[in-house]
Image 1 (cartoon, rainbow, N blue to C red):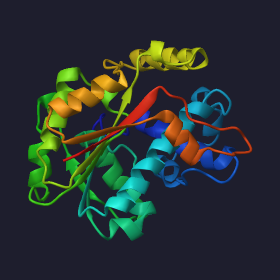
Image 2 (cartoon, helix red, strand yellow):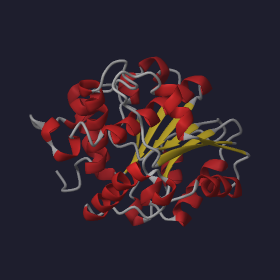
Image 3 (cartoon, rainbow, N blue to C red):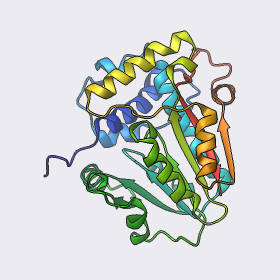
Length: 277
């Protein structure tokens, strides 16, 4: 096994936070996903990891399950023939939602090493698999070329997502991604999450963003891009999207967290835009 054939630590953390929501937070659960935990197969006692502490991670894992739920709710509405997950990590859509996955071709785009690892794990578990699209970004490979080579139909509309990725990319790289997806067939949708600058957050959320920023830098994957909502909307329009909507955090909190007995709610640091061709 090559040294790089292992899941990214950020992808594992995200999968475990999704499982922690099911295990620790009160019902009803915003998003029910423990398969990512099973895929990662963490050692016993993983819930005691410092980055899994139920109290201080509550708004973070709430944001993780909120964005996942929003994306799949919107996908169910759009019924696209193709679904492309950029930076798929330990996503488990194909395994959790066979009802939706059966209606479309699902492509997972990710780095070759982690994707080889995931492909083996899915085979070991006997789970259904998506179309894997390995892309060596560090070597300058084009995710678009690899996607088309894997069977993506450029004449058909697609639903494309990029969750928890843009903060690691430069503005130029984000613009290139937006331009590429904006060239898809009419009726396509792109859901992108982004980080806002700390000064836009309420005081009680700034410390969490600062801690996450320090942690990302320490792990060798620093955050390099932050956007004000109006700026990322303007960029998406400049890159060719006819319709761009910023989904306000208050809208999502009202939709997914209203009336909860435990007071769980997502923070405002990571936000969403929906772009349509």
